[in-house]
Length: 224
Length: 224
DNA sequence: AGAATAATTTAGGATAACCTAAATATATTA
DNA sequence: TAATATATTTAGGTTATCCTAAATTATTCT
Image (cartoon, rainbow over all chains, first blue to last red; front, side, top):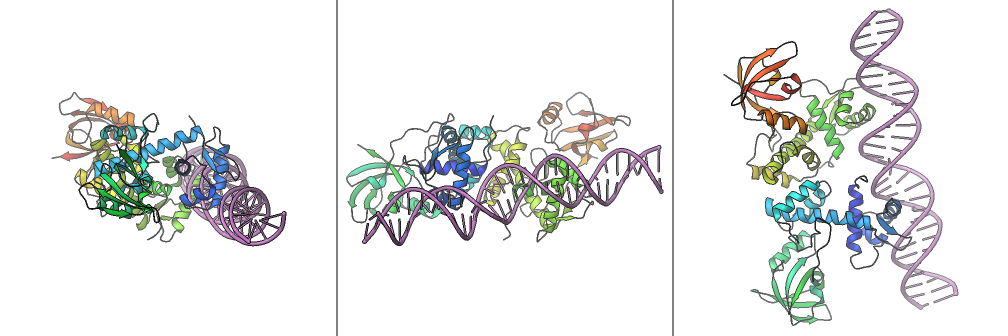
């Protein structure tokens, strides 16, 4: 057994995982902004993580970083913890949609494998968390999905909301008010190229016009 | 608001709370043994904790330490977290008696007040944890009790087991096998001054002879 | 291409905890 | 009471993580 990773390192790996989901390397600055520290500190840590045996990240000066296999494993483990915890805080303790993120962020680093297994079992081994984010399997495989950003719709499509990628409590409450929660059916009516606004109708509600700051956080599955 | 205490400081405070429960100061060596670190490290930390504003401990060279009011508050808060967590891991996640301690030790430092309130409510605001340890109230008052050590019995008393003060999983399983769990009724039959062995009969079981290494961990309430 | 701007790294320090080894203080015993 | 044993503290060092300020490298613009 290698020694367990510190909480901080786990947070770095999570951040790199998220920033590299588009295929590009995670830049020092972007990581610093995400973690709320200075770029200088990030450089130091990346050098260290890349020098570990086995390395957790692949890193070259001025080129940003991405996860090495071992780092990705660790990132998925933390992600699984986080998302199971969110699901379970809502299911078992009655937390609200917008309050679980912070609590899960603290708990994700300290729960044991037994804890992880028990809550997964209680919840019936869910594949998505309450915000629709995919939960890696116990074997740390990320489930495949056909999620597409709501901001990519151009009108005249029907779709089902699958995921809300957002940690801001205010925005989450707003989305709940709009009915934009996982499972909601909607029709995209009109797209305005100038401001990237999308007019859409959630089934059972009046049409609304929504800006890219919101549509860029919502994933849907398009219905044929 | 003063800044939150580190996990380590919380562990020091818990240890001091426990070691001073007999009224005496907690010695440097005893703390070191309890925390699994060297006495030298303890000295450094005690000096720091006593120098804080407000001080968390009262400490004088070579005299050991005890908790200052602010330190006691913090210790009771952590203790409440720990004991509520143990109760709730057993109730809600099906953990066994002997497995909860470690998990609770990690979680106790990171859960929010909201989490604490929610599990207290789910559990019906219990006054004791599954091992019978008293749980401080939300206002951080330790409930009164009439617990007496089983090792203080001298035969011909009837008593009810109220608490098992033990974190060792092996011993806990042994006690469960003997029926020595909170709520069990027993009669002390005979005491041997030479080896401090106590012969006792748990209701519905055969009499057993138990040594002081065990009776010193069990609290009972004597029945008239 | 050269200059200005932005991103990144290096260098030098800080803090919180821990450690070991040596020094000192207290307690016990002959 | 002196000698021994035990407990405690001091001194100096380590590791993990962060910081600021200065130096360097990369990118963009004219």
